[in-house]
Image (cartoon, rainbow, N blue to C red):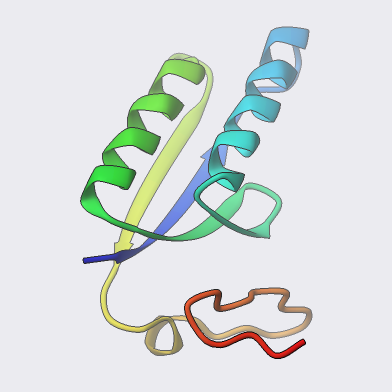
Length: 98
């Protein structure tokens, strides 16, 4: 069963190491979800996928300098998301018309 997860992060980018961590965090999140803002991803994950991603991200971040948050969101995306302005989200679980 898949869950709706919102992942938010703030990675320190003053140092070259911080900028490298930021790129790694973004790449890891891109493999599991869609970027909806610069440091925010919406994901539909199983419990196993969430645990795998969480472990991967915790190995990347510096817990003294960075912040990482996971929000479990109930129900369907349409119940908890209001978007104003540009919205590039694509529901890959629905049929795609090209």
